[in-house]
Structure formats: C-alpha cells, structure tokens
Image (cartoon, rainbow, N blue to C red; front, side, top):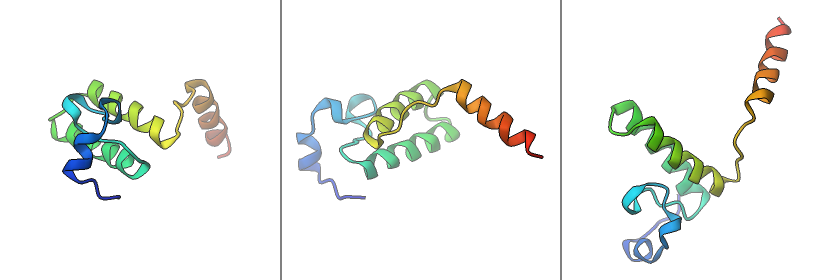
Length: 85
C-alpha cells in the first residue's frame, strides 16, 4: 500500500474518504482494498454496523473499478455450478 502522510491526507478532498468524519481514505486501489478489509474486521468485532460497511464497500468498489453484482446473474451462476454435480 502506498504511504499516505498526514499532510497529504489532510489535502485530500472529502470525496476521497469512504467513511464518516474523513475516515478510511481511498485515494488509490491499495487503500480502497484496505478500507474494505478494515470495515469487515470492524463489523466482526462489533464496532461497525453492516450499513456503514456497505457504504464503505460501495465507495471502495468505485475506486477498485468493481460493479455491484446482479443478484439474478449470481443466482444463475450458482444454479449452473450446483447442477454440475
């Protein structure tokens, strides 16, 4: 992950953060992936709600270039996978 100094973090616009109060900076892909991982850990530890995690994941996914999966397509892939056995 690229180093982000406190001076450069302070210069980031509000839109470059995935969490509230300028938390979880996501200026690049490595920081976005890290934000998703830390949010998952926080939910498992009980420090964050699933809703907050979803917002962080959505913002990080934009930086990572991932789109939200279509549930119908995911279900179809699972059905195809399961029928192979």
